[in-house]
Length: 155
Image (cartoon, rainbow, N blue to C red):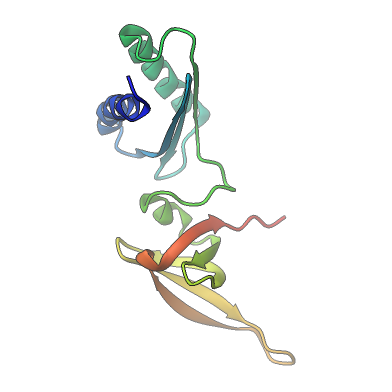
């Protein structure tokens, strides 16, 4: 079975499970040889016990169908804070957090994600001028203009 067919089969299994738990969603699925990596998120994040539950669910299907043999590696986890957003639903989780947006034209905008819908997002950007108080401005960006968006991690 080719990799795309394997991915479609796994996505189908996940879709069934995710319909029972709609607060969680698939962010990305990678199949590389015998290694399957599943990245899930939730409207309020995804706890490790849910990752384990999805892992056991997928193991039962993979073992039962012998889709990629019996010697495979399965990883089920959250996408991680340093990975770019892959699905629009992740933007909802990012509201109120600082993000870095790179547009297809090469420009970069850093700010606090204030709004996000199916077509656009709104960033509150700090405007700093020497000797003046910091002001903020709202910037709307069409999602179709965005190459990548990542959470900014500040320590």
